[in-house]
Length: 325
Ligand SMILES: NC(=O)c1ccc[n+]([C@@H]2O[C@H](COP(=O)([O-])OP(=O)(O)OC[C@H]3O[C@@H](n4cnc5c(N)ncnc54)[C@H](OP(=O)(O)O)[C@@H]3O)[C@@H](O)[C@H]2O)c1
Image (cartoon, rainbow, N blue to C red; front, side):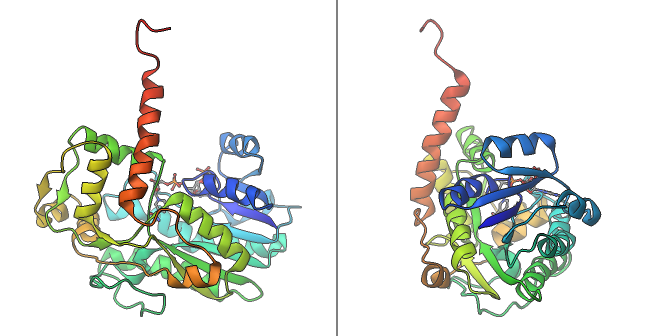
């Protein structure tokens, strides 16, 4: 297949380009920058420079391009979101960006569309400890600004899954971690003993970004039109456990505990994510229908592997020890 990939230079986009090539697909990657297009060409893909929020620019940039499928992995999360306003650019990519990419899909002649979704599509609320399957009702979103983010996630799915003439699939990823700057940043914080953990963190599901990329290729090839798939590892954890595992992987002591209320004071968004919303994902459908399963079954094993890469990267930054040739 020839795949038009939005977000091709991002944290999931990079391993996805590699895996699409390895599976015999051809990639046309979208990026807003010439430097991104150069990196894509170096990775063996075709780079097209366009902002997916600008429909005219996007359609113009894709003039003459043909593709069999579109994959939307565009987000704007380069910094950890602390305030609701940090999420608004990503909300727009899931509303206007998705609408524009659906237009682009028609122009390039694509028959399939796979879009990125997220575990909080189920709402920033307490779903208890039993992992949710995809048919769990999408009830309350969380109130206030959380409603805006969840509405954007649900609109993204809805547009793609019901788009006339297109086979749409949505992937509800767990939290990404992997050998990428965001996770390396957490390991750095833990190593410097600057990583606090909530005293009683709520449940999340995570997924190694390489496993998420593998699920995306499988969804492109085998996803059932109109279906959403949870894509997460096998063992949901609490945020307290997750951050303890990060610290252990970094060889650091257990993070200091902050009362749950303190998280909400520092960042209402992170407070809700870590101490109010509770969501584990059950990925049975993805395993059954996509023939996928995560190589990293849980964060303890996955983060230990990531920490090895993190140590290697730190050693490379330091360079050879002084006095040694
Ligand atoms: N499920 C999850 O947990 C999840 C999901 C996504 C991200 N994250 C986290 O968020 C952090 C940052 O992720 P990231 O590196 O992927 O960064 P990012 O800054 O969110 O960028 C993601 C991709 O979206 C593209 N993009 C953004 N806005 C665009 C626009 N208007 N038009 C066209 N393309 C656009 C970017 O392309 P260009 O910059 O090349 O234009 C890039 O390829 C990471 O730590 C990651 O783990 C987590």
